[in-house]
Length: 420
Ligand code: SF4
Image (cartoon, rainbow, N blue to C red; front, side, top):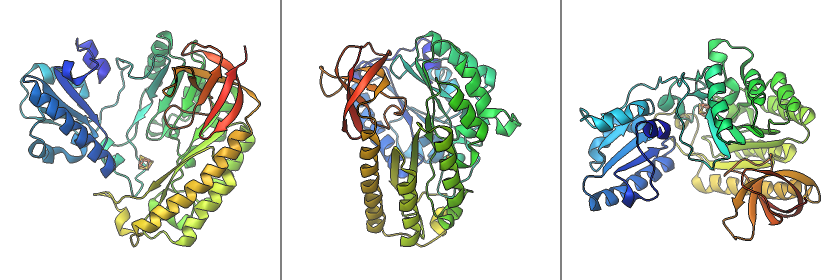
């Protein structure tokens, strides 16, 4: 969206006071995200009221999910555009559009290379390899909001990645609702391993990272390709959601506890140094103490380096609330606390094993805490969601890889010193 607007002559400014257009790109797959979007819209509406002539536009999942309800609820907003409609945004801003709501069915295929205006630091870029989702998990609104799974063509992705690498991007992060499903809907059997192999050939990219895989779609070939290419971060982000067969069935996840145990054992054998990340949900309708215990057991056995715990939220339009009696909030929150306590012990122990070793760290810049510390990441740490390495000695420019001796754990972060 930013790339398209920049192509049409729009510029990003640093503060709302300097803007003639206030654009809020929204997330709305769970109620708290929608609430956060509405809070931001109302805050920007106050800026708009102080600056006549400024326009306020809301894009993305909020209009896509709530559509027709919004113009009346948010009269301050000039234009609502859905997840498909951003390519027309510049045109809508120039013309006098009929009506304030522009939401079409989620079918946009991103087939052509998209113009980009980086919103991340210059050394980092996200590459969307597919849009939508066809899994239909019973708790999830995303397939309804973003439509069925559509992979972007291989040539398009390579062209976009090549341009990003040429512009100085060192770390390319592949995203989709399920990256491991890449190419399946058009019968492209080589799929994600082929895409990764091609991306690894591009000059300039130091790290290629994969987020959001599906545990049922990790193949032996994917493990082999990841093990064979040092640029591909040894990092598996596989949201399992739960570990008890009955809960997994109610969630519509289509794998079992035994399959998960086999998968993680295979991953450890293929890439012993890999970081395993997952997210899980506690308090799903009907979740019993015994079912929750299966999740605790799996977390203790697999020892994920990164584990996100969410408390189940019933979402309008999903089947999950009908699939079991609600778990009291207090119980669900207590389960989340027990899991987090276990995980915090595991993380400290796992990170401690790295102390004393020398690792490559991608320097990101001066840390937020102190101008005397640099902040960077290991290939085992994804930006924003995992910990960091705080560098207490030595110099390195943002975007460079440095050899760092790790000296201490301050979980989830590590401390270290540049060695040469
Ligand atoms: S795979 Fe992820 S995005 Fe797709 S339906 Fe399931 S939870 Fe939602």
